[in-house]
Structures are given as C-alpha cells and as structure tokens.
Image (cartoon, rainbow, N blue to C red; front, side, top):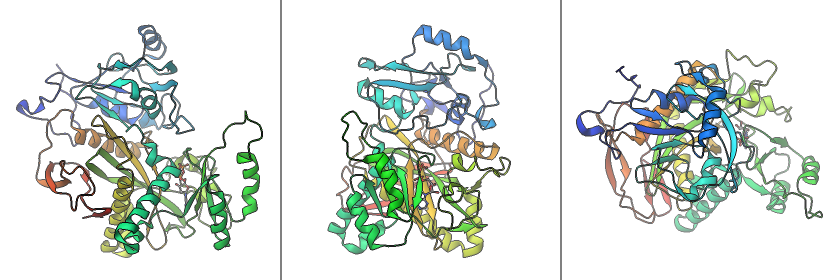
Length: 497
Ligand code: ADP
C-alpha cells in the first residue's frame, strides 16, 4: 500500500486517537465544487470520495463516460480555472430556492476519476442521506435539501440553513442595526458607537424615503448602489445626484401596475467611503477567512493569512463611473484592458501588514487588526440568535474589509461562498492552506489537535448571551494558522480580548 500524502499542518494521530465517531474506516466525503477544496479533500489521508447526492446510477454512468479524466496531482485550480467553467457563485441570486436542486458536482465515482456535471433534480422525499460523512455542498443544494434531510450524529455539512441573514447585504445591515440599538438601550450611546464600522446603509425600495431625507441632509457626498443578493461587483454603481438613480428607479421599481411584473430587485444604497487607504495610489480591500463551527455557543476561528485585493487603476473621485477604479473585486479587475495576469491584483495580508508596520509602526497595525477581529465578532453576534444552529453545520466566511485613510476598518460585506478558485500559484497555496486548516479544526478524524499553545473558547455550558461573562474553557491547538478569536460577552457587550 502506498503511503498517504502528508498534509501540511495536519498531525497524524497516534494509537486509538484516530478512532473517531466513525471508527477506523475512511472518511467519506462529497464535494460540489471542482476547485481547490476538491484538491484538499483528495489529499487528505484516509478520506474517500463518494458520488454526488441525488445522482441516479444511470446519471452517474453517463457523467463518468462524459468527463472521465485521470486524476492527477495538477489541479484545475492551479491553472486558475474552474473545470466546470463556472464561477464559485454560479447563481446570480443568493436567495434560497425551494423547488429544485441545481448543483455542480464533481461526481467522483472512484478517487482519481472526475466527471463534471451540472443538472437539476427534483426535491427529494424526506430521506436519510447516510452515505457520506462530510459534504462541501453549495448553498443552493443546502437550501433545497436541508429541510428534508436527517443527518446522522457525526455528519458535517457546509453552511448553516439561513446563512443569508449575514451574507445578504440588506439583512447583514438590518441585523447589525438591531444589535446596535439593543446595545444603546442596554449599554448606552458610547458603547453603541463601537458599531460604527459599517457605512450608513438603506434598503431600497423599502427605505427609499428615509434615504432621500439622509441624502438631502448630506449634500455632495457619494453613494454606492448594490443589488442585495448579487456578487462579484455585478449591478453596482456610484452616484452623486438623486436624478442619477431616477432612471434606475423607473426601470427597477416603479409601482407595479402590471400584476405579472416581477417583484423589484432589492438594493442597498450605502455611503461610499471616499477616502480609502491607498497603496501606490490604488484602493484595496482585505479578504479575511473566518470559520464558525458553532453559533451556540459562538465558536469562531480566524485565518491569519488572507489577501488584499487591489484595483487596477489609480484612485480618483473624478471618474465615479469607472469600476476599475472603485471596485476591488477580482472578477471586475481582471477584465481591465491593462490587467496583467502574471502580476495579478493581490497582496498577501502578511505583506500588507509589513507595509503598514513599516509606515505606521507595529502598534498601529495591531490595532487595525484588532479592529477587524472586533468587526467579525460583533457581526456574528448580531445573528447569533437568528441563525439556525445545527451541530452538523459549519461555515467558512470571506469577510471584505476596507481601510480608510485613517486606517479605520470598514465592513463591506460577508460572503458564505468566498471564491476558492485560484488565480495563480500563490493564491492556490493560500486557499489550500485555509481549507486544510478548516478540516484540521473540524477534525473529523477526531485526532484531537495537540500542541503547545493554549486557546480559550466561551464555555459550552453558557447557553445564553445574557450571561454576565461567559466562562472560558480550554482548547488546545497546534500548528494551525487558524486561531480562535477570544472574546467576552457581557449582556449585549462583546469585547475581543
Ligand atoms: P459584491 O458582493 O458584488 O462583491 P461588495 O459590497 O463587496 O459587492 O462591493 C464590491 C466592491 O465595491 C468592494 O469590494 C469595494 O471595493 C467596493 N465597495 C463596496 N461598497 C463600498 C463602500 N461603501 N465604499 C467604498 N467602496 C465600496
């Protein structure tokens, strides 16, 4: 038998430590994606790929014939391409769908043999889906199947049922505003000011009139319009004058006279951050990876790596219609005529930290990143009672954080399906590292992560956030770039420690 590949950061367990809830047999996984995550899963010692869900034997055979290619160490993602040709977020709308399942799956029938497929299947009858232990599914699959699934004790699946409470732009802001109000009521105005990390935002069309009042109160500033449920910069535009959204308003949400007309798309209108921190004259935002393994109690892990995404063109407020200047999405920037794929538009977070430390000192940089931790914990706290907590579920979020010229971090958005398709070797290594650590933390091998450093989590017994201060209990980790965020909760007050 050949020796399994060694996975960086993964400690081979000794003795009977690896006898997890599924005993000594291999861990069976499914994966809806054909990018870095699939490579990580395949390299995991003792893990075995099984066919995608709801795939009939006939479909499996067809897919096997269509796309069978020999599995090899070179991945599609290393070449910066998703084999299916699709993006990580294939559905333009993040809304859950209830009637059909549409998912992409690699449908691996044997380790090392790949067949791509994209198809729809009807919602299954309530079934026990028991032939896998771990499923990296897409959101559409989860929305269509979660309510009709019984999971066995040990099974783990990506996404919480209603993750969109945090990942839809309008709902994220609604939940944050609610917690801010509660904090003001319970802790006073000063404490509520610690929620000033998201730009003033209104939902359209429902809050159009409040927005207009605010618009008139602050003449001359720039606003940004964003579809609430789209991603990758689609449908976004900036404006200075109310008349600039009149045309949009006419097209998008004129009062419905035709009963058959579709419901208007929800947008958010947000105050544009006009003074971003610039490096080389360019704007950037920071992608931060966060793993939530439980909402009750809240258990959060932060990946210390990550990257800054830069715009391709120098920043200026003269050309607010130029998306290459104002949007930092890679999907947008890579279409710029002068985009250089060899250089890309990313900097590792470590590089960014070094740059900022050299300019402003380490203490300033420590504060910036502590501010980001604070944003993460507060935003998760804002939905803690709303998210349907399920011990089978976990979520890997991609936070987008923008720094302004005063190095103040701003929360722009939170993604439940951050892109795992790599744009180059460095990007691939980074994504590989994050995903590998996610699996290390989830620890399906039940190998316990052992090592020298001691970390703390809020006590599992503290069920309510109303507890004065959560008791802490010990957790041990080793060799991970992913570390728990330590925090205290006192009524509605959350503090990163
Ligand atoms: P999407 O989900 O389409 O990526 P985002 O909300 O992340 O939408 O916005 C896309 C990009 O636009 C961000 O990465 C950021 O560069 C820029 N952006 C969004 N909102 C603001 C804002 N309020 N101020 C400044 N830049 C913004």
